[in-house]
Length: 121
Image (cartoon, rainbow, N blue to C red; front, side):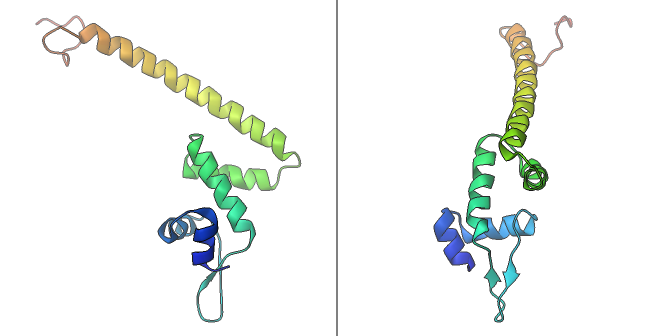
């Protein structure tokens, strides 16, 4: 299928599809007249990419894990493992943000919130 049809079927712009192709997330062939030619599986793959992005996965993670999933005997199990790992990453980031928030809260009302804690005023 050509890029216009793929865009229509996925709701993505042609520029986004070209970007994914340039990034190596999507592969196309070429027709005799040079137009991009995408397989029917590209629709499902692009839906996966968009869903994974919405769940917080970077494009690099999606590219890496996409290859892992294609070779997995148990796709559901492999996805669950990916989600569990992402939860650990999110939990660690939330802990870092909690520490940052506490530090910012201690500086509120100090006159200069950029001073190091305990530094002379």
